[in-house]
Image (cartoon, rainbow, N blue to C red; front, side, top):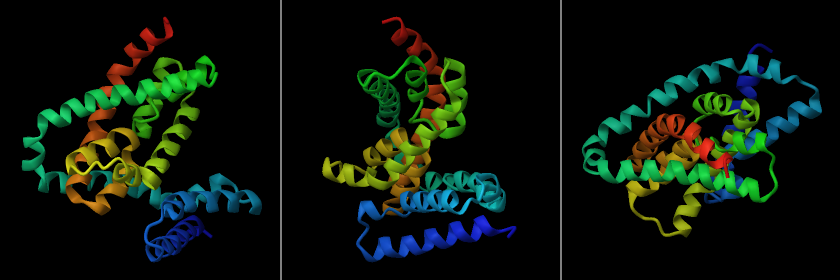
Length: 227
């Protein structure tokens, strides 16, 4: 039972990935989204604790680090193209990070969210580790922010590429920027399967947007909360 979580997670994800491929990559069959739902329901109905599951799947958690570092490989391969688009990428990250925070804040505000939720949702497009720290700094609820970040990543992984296709965004750099700035790691994991350059740009955008937003958001929140 020591590797229960590992085998269950890999088995479910593999089976769903096969279904996803055979059905032509339909967004509603996204293996990441369905794996999370099935495992969550399974743990709840079986009475197996989340702590036990995580402990038995800890090797997957450990491998997240090397997986993120491995994004440097396509980044290195595509470095010449990325350098040639340095201006466009910089503008995309600066504007995209700002828009992501503002839209999340104002949509939640229009829906009647209280102050704690507003402060927790603003960092939802930053990668989890940074978002939790930012949320704590600006007065949000770190646990809620973590959930919102994960949900954002799942949705980006599930429908991000489809939305880019629907909007007829064909430029490979622009596609990578869109995924990396808005849906961080899970979005990057999806688009890198379609195109290495887009995946490299997405990984870079994810990292730079995290750094940029960690400095920008506290000051932005002060301005927003004064209104």
